[in-house]
Image (cartoon, rainbow, N blue to C red; front, side, top):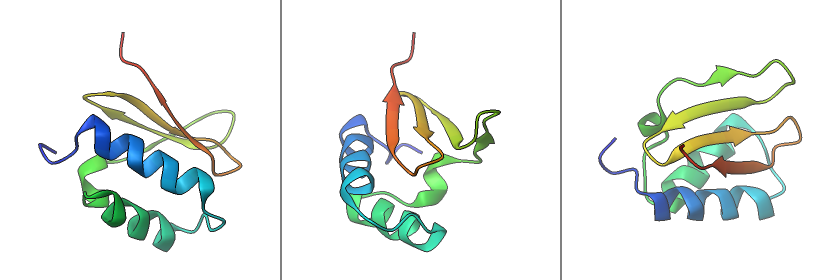
Length: 75
């Protein structure tokens, strides 16, 4: 997880949000393109409203049901 920097997460979010494919395979490809292994995110939590979230050292990475990503800053 040391390889998972905030700038890599931000790059990943930009890639995901402009891409048209939201498959699991594309998720992994986009992580690699952003410079980290998808396994560095750890296990996701399924959100009640749909989508998934990963707790990272840089905040909560959220994938909304429509595939859009965001990073909620850690408090």
